[in-house]
Image (tube, one colour):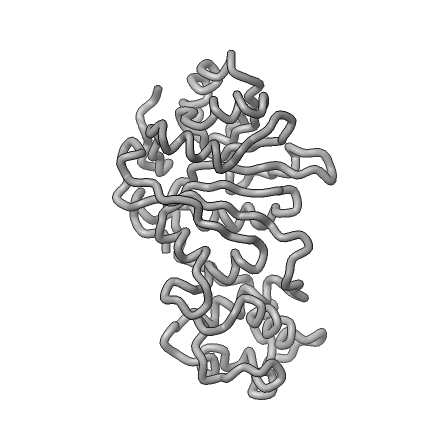
Length: 290
């Protein structure tokens, strides 16, 4: 098998005990449409194939495709798509109205962009089981009021039920990353519990609210929310963003993004959404996924 490549952020899972726990958590069944992102050397690919009989895999590294196909040829029906998961259209793998189950060991240097790419395609996804940097998982599942609750928590929990299942130590991978990992389950909520009039405006408002965590909402959302808006929803404008529940952010976004936006209450609506994090493609493998 080819060696791990730094430019792809590759850390191959090799611990059989961890592999067994992952398969148990996913609990695949025959007839399900399973999709694996970044199968690498196939650590969980063969086990998924044995359980479900068929599997689609999306792999960017072309040097891994032939060895992977060869090692799985006698196990089940494996279809490998040589593609960048950030650009891949998952809906092409299912018939209209059907849903797939997504799993993968995501490269930590682009994990958050991948998460948001998957959320864009949530209509065709039943659930997601993903290996991520533990710090990122902690932020995704964090409750309001905690130190780790932030933009990522609100944006993911708006659309999904998020569950941190178990931790994975660095030595479970080759090469061992410089950070701990965790296994996460995301279940898209259908219908969503917090309907949004304008998801783009909601993203901008959440991003603005957490841009300076030590400042109050009155300061961070100046120009986006008025004293009247806060009073309508019973929000204390002297609170900080980390004190607001996911549902409250949704309500505030819907209230401040009027049908006819004005510069005062929705001045950012026509601007492209700000990235939730820095461009992770610039981070070296194993660095923090902010």
